[in-house]
Length: 315
Length: 280
Image: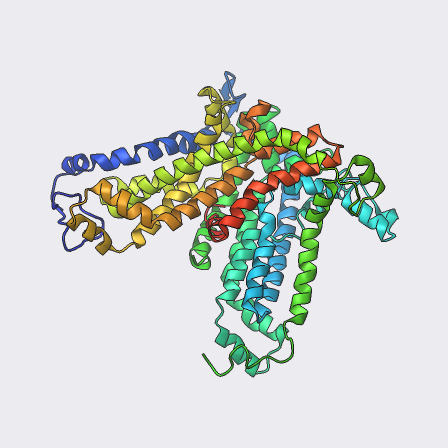
């Protein structure tokens, strides 16, 4: 029994031989290394190798095959003067700004309504109801909203006709002036599930006594909202905002499915440009450089996310 | 509790305004879904003629013709996501257990090799990873999807499993050692069964992630009969672009699998969802 490998935390019955020489400790851990062989190999091949390949190849002209030569920082310089990329960055900033507000205010509002209910059973059911759209595959969200914006038989235009606003019907995704707004409202009344659950979880951990004593002191709904509920869920709100930023910066399936960046470049975002550079134009070097820029931008956000989420999601 | 318990403070029906707001919210949430279901029973003539309301006769034939296409994609997705989940559950629990319970040389380095990947977004690795998978000859095979999904999912899953195993009390393992269990027996008969809730969470995170992944299949799979559901739906929507009834019947059918999972394992579904916040 005592020959057993020392467990990590010291206990009464496992003995740890601290002084044994290094090679002996490595040898004794051979089964542990074997157990880690598969995951380590997988991560090296499919995660670390592509990550370094992206950093490295961002300095090369590369078609993904034989054409491969060093150009230094040329791709990064090109980005500065690339009009498409500039439009893409502007679109992304506006889009993220809008989505962050919408995807924080909307779930907060719904969660606030729910915790104001006395009936806990109803609160539970409302939570389930608002999480429900999650079962619809993500791509269907986009396809359904493509139908909503359809210029001929779309839900939005039909609805406008129905209430007598027929002159406002529009090719929402086909007009450069409306396309980004249309995309910003995709999934609109549906709550962002993750953000909603996080904010609701935060609101539900506010002790009942706090609300009760506020009520005794005569605080109404609005006072309670601004002096108790919002300050006490600051961490959850921050986390929801960071998550929205992270999602929106790297996910481009929405843009790919709804408009493919069009019309023209009017709904281009950097991640979609990366995709198109690599898979339409075989510019893997340029695509890698865009990836590196996005990575650097997201790195800070991720570090903050890890800090905040450590405290905000209570499991 | 205090004297101001729930019943004590109740004045009239205080819930009513909040309930009304929530009901309005619920209606706008479900409205598009209901319209999709209604339309899925219509022929095109009925749809153009009467956009909003259900109309007889119900064209259930839409479902038959949609199912004839969609079932293939659903089966593919179940196979791909299912094998990914099994592999991740096994590999991540073993790795998490090793990291949680043992001290050995290079442990810190190896573990950092796992968790620093949380900071690497998929968009950075997309293009070079495609070249790699292509050069390995895995394009247009399930291995392209499964290998990348497994390694991507391992990052977070291993971390979750490690935290879980660390939280188990040492006495539990001591008891098993005293009874003469070998290390692998402790893992198989004590630790793994105890970790079932965390394994369920990991499985759900993986399921939601792989089921909805569109981009990676889009670049690696070309054959129609190998496509997973997300990609298949994109194909389906362009094949049936103006056949609204069949199109929406296909949409309804393809929502059923996750709906079933949600109905059976709601709590795990939600915990799997929230644990995804660590690697976004």
